[in-house]
Structure formats: C-alpha cells, structure tokens
Length: 231
Image (cartoon, rainbow, N blue to C red; front, side):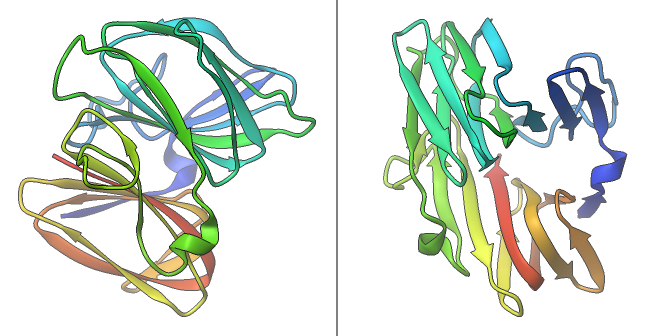
C-alpha cells in the first residue's frame, strides 16, 4: 500500500525561531490517523533561525536521528558529547535510560533538518551519541546506509531493526524501493522533484509504504532522498 503525503498538508508549528512541519502527531499537533508508521514515530521538518535552537531538555527510550539539509547544528549533551553536524551529514542520539541535550544553530544562516525518531527494540539501554559525514557523491544514484540496527552496516548504530537510507539522484535516473511484507517504508524528498509512476513528488513531499510493495522513483530534476525502512 502506498500513501502520498504532501508537504502542504503536514502539521505545522511556527514561532519566532522555529518553523516546523510534522509528518506525524507531535507536541501540540494531533492526527489520530498519523501516530507513526511501524517503529517510526516522528519525522519533523525543521527550519531553525541563525543563532537560536533547542535549549537543554531530556529524552529517554528513543532513537533520534538528525539529517541536516542545509546549514549545521551543534549538539551538546549530559554525557559530555559535543559536535557540529553539517548539511548532508547525520547524527544519532540513542536516548536509552535518559539523556539531556541541546541542539543549537550557531551559524550565520538558517539551518534546515529532518529529525527522525524511531522506537527502540530495547528499553533503558546505555545512552550514546555519534555523528558521521556522508559525502553526497558517495551516494549518487544509489542508496547509502546512514543509520542501522544491523552491526554489519557502515551507518551509525541504532537500537531497532531499521535502516535510515540516503541517496542523491541525477535527473533521469531511477531508484527502486522494495518494502518487504511486515515492514514499513517512509520516503521523504529532501530536494528536487521525482516521479512515482504518473505522480510527481516535489521537495519535502513524502510517501508512506506498507509492505509488501516495490516502487520506483525517477528524478525529473536532481533530487535528494531520505528513506526509513523499519518493522
């Protein structure tokens, strides 16, 4: 089953420093038909003004993956970790038994990012944080594993039978998405334009896939895609 979710129909939140769009129910936005997709619980599309950000706050028992689209975000946490993640790169915070962190845009320009939350397959584990560079040239016209619960993958580790994948797709090129029975796929177009059959997807549109299902997307213009495949 395939469900196309247009960017302009997402939940929304705006204040003086944050412009957010919610793919699933989150904070003050509630849609009982969109409480998650398999183990995927949150996909937020955030624009954070320069010099602002999320002050220190706690989390527990959630795998939190941040994919930076433009600009950069600086992370600090109660474990003593600190790092700056730039556009195209990824950080993972496995909140486990509990962690407190801040995410701040210290740049001179606005930062845009996807924040993806996946429910863990074990509770109250030891919290950890990590970040990794993923050059876009290395994922041209093919999927690259950005985060994964499979230790044999080269992506950042998460505690779930899930993968976060990224690709850049040149105009005219095609990528296949195969979602097996019992699994869920969620595709978001970070930039560009693609066709799924006769349907055009524009930047920040999404496709929710319930397996078994195999679909292909073809780039109308150079595109950047992020996909979660999970139980």
